[in-house]
Image 1 (cartoon, rainbow, N blue to C red):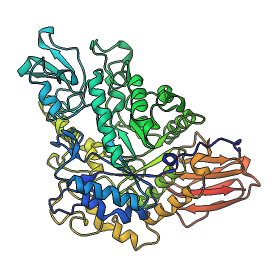
Image 2 (image 1 turned 60 degrees about the vertical axis):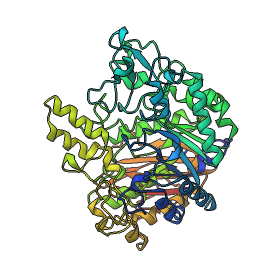
Image 3 (image 1 turned 45 degrees about the vertical axis):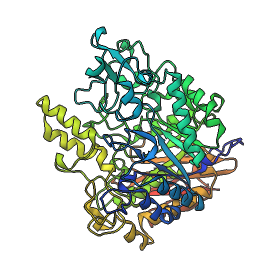
Image 4 (image 1 turned 30 degrees about the vertical axis):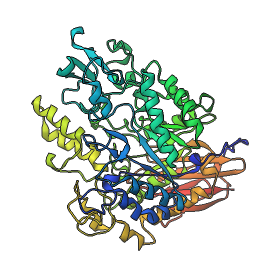
Length: 568
């Protein structure tokens, strides 16, 4: 197997850390209102620490009317009353620091809530000092050029406001007007609120749709080169990198913090413009190539009819790893609050294959180069809930798209079938702490239904007591990564690129080399490596009891099995 030449590792805590994402509304309720809160996270800090993770990414807890579950912020310096108080937040942060955990918060500054003071002032008159904090199109200029919205029933990103006879831009909900980064006063407001949280001791930001912040304020028609797709157009604003560089110079460079941008629409060829260390912009970002793999082209939330192929899955990760081989740094994730549960999407959540699938996917994230991000419940193999009726859903995206289909006379039954696999609510069901009625999440009915499989072993209490559980495998795999720098910084080499059952690769650094074998199939497979003939190997971990090495170069791999070997 190929060994890597000596590299300057440029070690950083945010490269070596493992991130645990918490959706606070669904993690732990302590107030008895069916909604998770900050004190619930405080209650579970020892559990989080026991996982071996290093960084908590906390979805928005700021004051918000909750049109989009906290991503519509009305006060960036206050805590949402449903979640608690600033004193609760300070206690949470102190408790994390005591346990050696770092906190990354969401920075949502492409848009605010329409209930934010800035927007309330902005819509009062065209002469208001806050008018230029948002994008307005005066009605006397006619209907503004088409802009697409994620959450609008009519997919229209312009909303007419009668008070000043003008339209405002909202790339998301009508209650999420886009902020005007072209205004330097607005940018200074944002930098100041970032300093507010950093000065409290927050360790970084995950930057919501940060690739959208720059707009061409002439609002031309969508150029033909985008083939009718607005997302890559939104991500290619004329001053995006000017703003990120300025943010870094004025704020980020003054603190020891981690930054990860959510970057829909950013092409692989543009990646290093964001994260090349010489550019001084961001540490890393989330791309969406994997999240688009099983979706219809140009349809972010529609599942494609054909099954995705493992060769395509491999190519996405191999291509992106190649981008960061010498410069920059990547992120690794399989699900989050916007995408369905990983074991249901990329594995197999049937009772037969659930355990191996969940642990195999954990092994994948923890043996790839790039900072791994785990979503709450992923450590116990939580699955999609697959709601049967529209009334079960809470997400604005599902509700508004259903209304669009209803108005257009479309097929609502087919839409609900799609949502069973695609809906964001699959990822937002309450954390499954035990097998009680509400899974230990709340003493009252939760804001969204609990998955009934909490009574079938997919809960923390049951898995704590089982040494062979998904949870305890996760802990072992975390420690394996932490104790082998090669699994963090080592070179990645793809093996068997055309194999549709097994994902095989090596991680190598100087004289160390590790072989990783991952089955993505319901069937057994046999794989052979000529170059491994005569190479001694030690099995470090497997999610299946059997060591299936037949001889020096041949391995039998069971369904959804994961194996990590050290080669000598």
